[in-house]
Image (cartoon, rainbow, N blue to C red; front, side, top):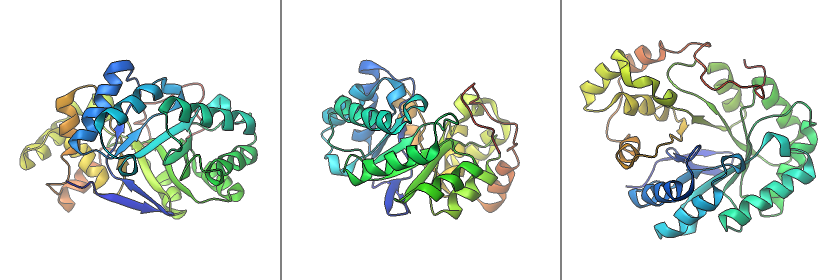
Length: 274
């Protein structure tokens, strides 16, 4: 099946991708290869993940033509000075063995490095042909607006933690206001959904798992999801989201699970969240 995609500021981003955080070596390469053979057309990696070589290996092993795969990578928080960003982007391409990526993101904002220079360097990567599209990740409402005051290229997505337990309505609204796609990482709340009675009940009504309900809840709102897994069975399950539809009542019931306090990803480098 062809993967539904969302159009955002000139980019066409497949709604389901494989997240590769914490996947390493041959495990990572095998999962990327398996995902692409299964029908995935969106792979998400980052310089910080330490697996770009393996992602490239899996991409080549799959036999899927390069122009059919949307590849995303990210520049780490410590590499956001202009020269460092360019060096990081070129290093990522060398590891992936690709002439360009489809999307290059700022992985996390860094308040100690001026955003104007970072955004300027990011835009240069697009102009130089190293990235077909550029965007941001983990940006708050204020940082989204600041980024747009500096950018000379359309930013196509803001990638951030987004799942049924976390109310991200403010950031989602600000992201969409600028025409950007919302990309959700940790869309299954790192497995927290397994024991949820509401999600299990809704899933049972559709012959689906709680995790599939969570993912469907997001893609039904045109939110891109990039669940990470090292299990081949789960890989297939995470992709089977387009043969059922949640009712309006089910969507409302699931949305009620969300809270501003539902965040899972929190560390010393995070910004002041909305």
